[in-house]
Length: 149
Image (cartoon, rainbow, N blue to C red; front, side):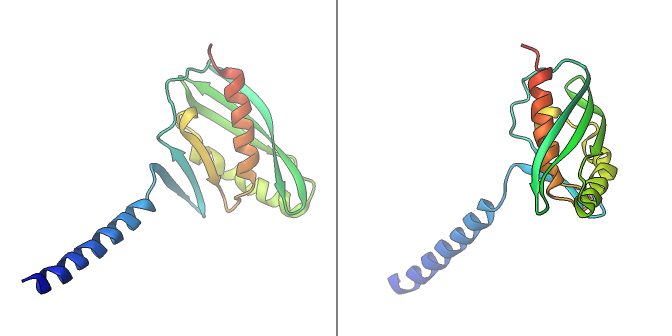
């Protein structure tokens, strides 16, 4: 009896490890594909108890591309802690960087409008993954400015 039980227990153990490994790859962040290679991660574990003053806010976000340091200007409208409008203005001078920033700017509204500002974490939009660093930097600055104490 012990000889048939051991292989079964071993098989169950390996199955459990496989399930654990599969679940370890999961996270609480959701990825939303808005077409054209665009996606954003929304962290649903963020503290959404913060309150932000309604209004229009603007900030410049910095990031580094292969062409060097780069910036984008981000303007958002906050209504009830939700992004109601967004405009991203490309500031890159390098043609390749400017192209990626423009793709990002063209697709960002579809990804972020209607999102709670506290759960927003953009990773890639319109095929541009580096511009999101500047966008997220600007959003962090805006959150600090708009936070109701």
